[in-house]
Amino acid sequence: MKIQILKNDTYQSVDNLPKKGTDRATGYDVIATSGPEIIGENNDRGGYKRVDYIQYRTNLKLAVQKDRVFSNFGYNDFDHDILAFPRSSISKYNLVLANCIGLIDADYRGEVLLRFKYIFQPEDYIISDNQIIGSVNPTKIYSIGDKICQLKVTKVENVEFTLVD
Image 1: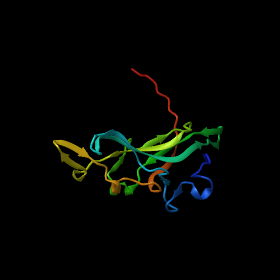
Image 2: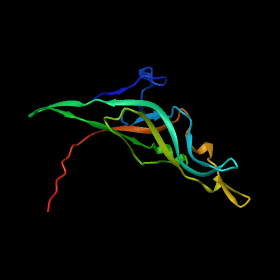
Image 3: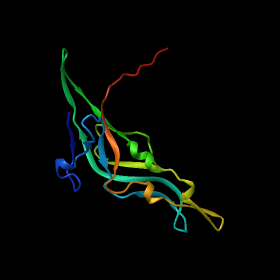
Image 4: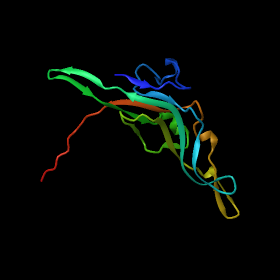
């Protein structure tokens, strides 16, 4: 099975493509190609009232190709999707993947964006003039070039839903 990646500034040679960390690994590491984009509501004191999510760009635009497999009944085409899992190293950060596991459908052609929820810690808050001001600790979020997720390819099983009494 092949996954095509659109060439761009980040992915110009096969050396830059997502890779497995070891021969027996099942996930392909993806790096952040942008710094964190913090989406939320600022307050007037340089902190945050609310952080909805922190988004990272990957510059990945994928096209999952169908597998053609011969069986006793002829050729069958199988679709695949891609799952984006958080890396185990995420426990070192104040982040959690916003949708727990990202699903990239076979027909999606846009850029793979990863959104994380920031987990505020007591040290992230200060109280000033009876207002609570939250800050994002830059040492507890990903930076550009960090490995931020792993991609896992899965076979799509088409099912039929039926109504019964």
